[in-house]
Length: 140
Image (cartoon, rainbow, N blue to C red; front, side, top):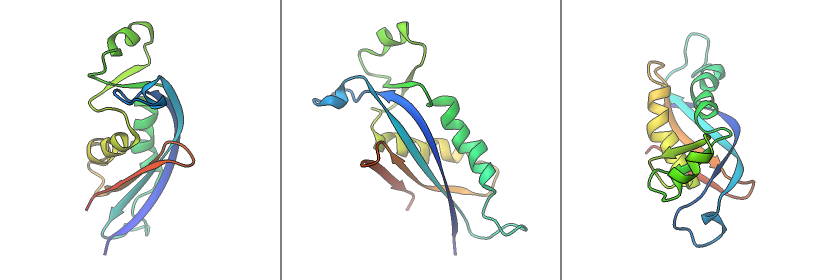
């Protein structure tokens, strides 16, 4: 039976949703909260799925190093090059940076790489964009 643990991490970043006809099509930012749920089928010798410090050093630190206080733009966004020329914090991502796509990227790309070698699997990411709005994705 799988056993799960979770840790959250707060970060701030800007984005714009290319093609959105409302306010989210404009440059803006959020104070995000990412919830990382990890699982393993058995506890280690100390009685843990994984030390919370491992989640912090591998998943939370990835977010700090790559997205915190950065501006995320889809690599195909037509304003990306112009904005990157004046702001070095612009990060090109391979998806339109919605909360849903960001959560999926953390789950399917970042998680497997960051947790490699631990025997622990990232199985769910909940990404709160605001206190009222979130994206929730999990492995089947």
